[in-house]
Length: 158
Picture 1: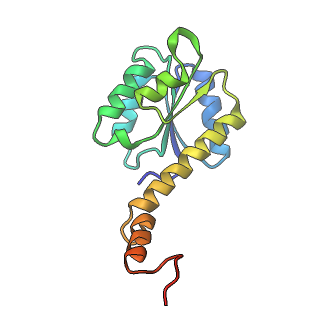
Picture 2: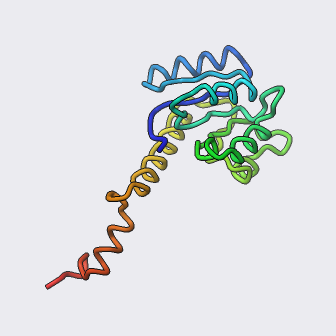
Picture 3: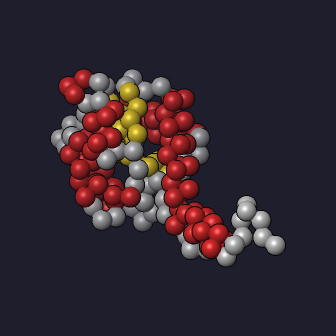
């Protein structure tokens, strides 16, 4: 599943895009930079290994962040990539609205870099946990149920 430290940053301000890319690269993130929704979709199509998260400016030009989220969540492959939406609280673009669209988290603008890193780390941790649960022999929940059905577990077995 998606557990590497690879990020697609979608930001229409070129200076901020480059700054975020450089800063996250210093923290060992592999970065893919896109200046809008169309470029983001093209870059996703060219990537062999999908990013583990998308940082999306919800107010990008040409294709809005909202439209991009809807497109990504309807796609059979890209719908599994977590999206961290970034935006101001203007014009009805709230955390609740972004989460209702299918984003996994929301970070207000202007971006606070330590908060951004914390949110990205939490998203990665959730994805790693999902990945562990999805793998057959390591499926923690099914293993727990199997042990209970055999009489093992914290109840003690004679």
